[in-house]
Length: 426
Image (cartoon, rainbow, N blue to C red; front, top):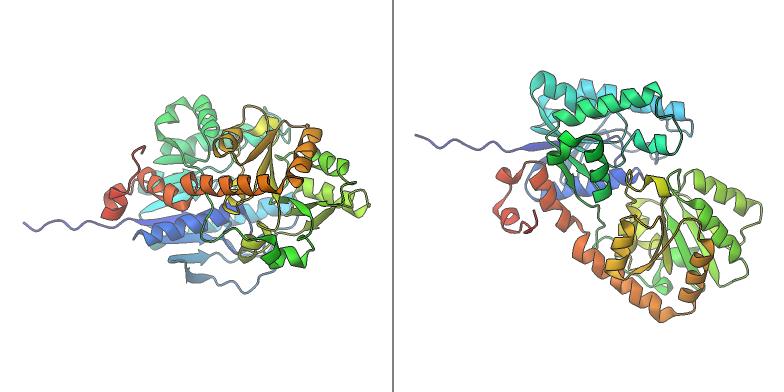
């Protein structure tokens, strides 16, 4: 009797944001899809046209990139600052996904859905209920919990109840749920005890081959913006509602007399707009604000500093997981984290001995640390080297990909090399 031929699993990832977009979720999906393709899996991505990098009009609707077949839905650029335009754009994207995924070639053997935009998981629920199609969810932020805690919407509002209902339906039918931190997992288990067995923690990462340490004296980005002859404190990425911009602002204001210290903000968000107003009014002469940088610029922008900042508000630490810390580690820069005492980021910094952590509102302690580090260049170098070692030890795609293969149920289809290299803790 002839041996039955094993059917190879094809993975289809659906996400609204994907490079050249600046959104962090898109960057991680780009790395994940490429790594799975390198392991021999057939990977496709269905995504939208650029929303953040909307000035790039030459993006192809279909292309092979990084070993992955990328399809982009046709789109009108509605990604303005108006919330209603963003909501409409997300709804339009989901509707197109439902239609396009009627094709088995597009949805593949197993669907992987991200948590952006909201309700995207309904696509997996729909095709599982009516066609028995399997799917997994990568949860980058736990909504509507984030919105409730930030008091954007009341706990008893109908949209919250509906959102929770949808989450429950989507997550119940999923094969697996992936979150980015242990606190996120514990929050989901608290809300949905029946899901405990399918929730898995896989930390994000940075690519140590893409982001490498570069001395500021040899860094064109640092030279271009006059950052080579001063101590530079960098905040790169979204400074939004979940981040503590107040502590950073007060710290920067207290150091205006130190002409050798400069704050650089790269990105956008509610907090960034406040910083921009302060700079425009002349109240923050020691600060520079720049827009999001293209992916190819990141190795230079992230290394054009002497200290990088990460911040998170006290009441959202188990609903989101700041991904910017991994790029900081890759850049071999010390890190200062502003967060509550029980936040998991403190464990990362303590383990790596790569910086320091500060309570929310403790602007003076942060300012004192910046001054101390500016006056002790040898400590900058030591902490930076520790940061790089920590990344290489725990937070690269090489560490993450075996976990994804295991959690997505691909172990039976993976090459022998992946099987043999499976970490003992899986």
